Length: 141
Image 1 (cartoon, one colour):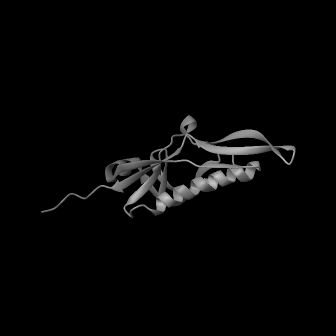
Image 2 (tube, one colour):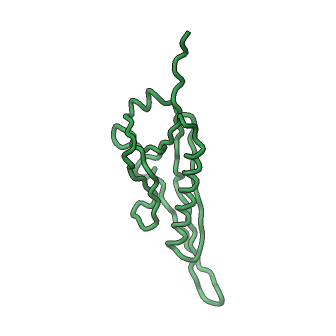
Image 3 (cartoon, one colour):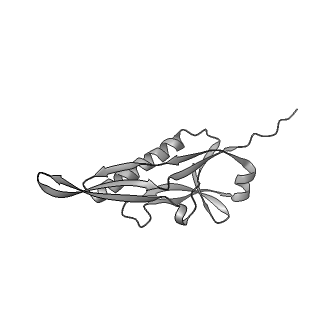
């Protein structure tokens, strides 16, 4: 399950990666689970952090950007699917300049003697996802 921090709690979220949105890389609360920050810190331990990136290039701007977002979402969902059932995935990027954005590089190409635009998209900074696992319960004798 994927979580994102909102104020003093972590909410379960679904990816909402949309090229036509103002914030292309977004998450939407799914209202399935809410965990307080204190509970996460007390119950879970951070295991790893994964930096997810993607690239795409093509002749059509919106299609190319959406291809990039689809690739990024696919990597995110693969990471989530590979988690142990006692683990959660937490969006580690902060808001503002730390939030991942799509970056466009534009170049001119010549196709059949005509000038054409070619779009290249990347993500910067990477989408950082932290894996948290339930702390082992205390051993009993």
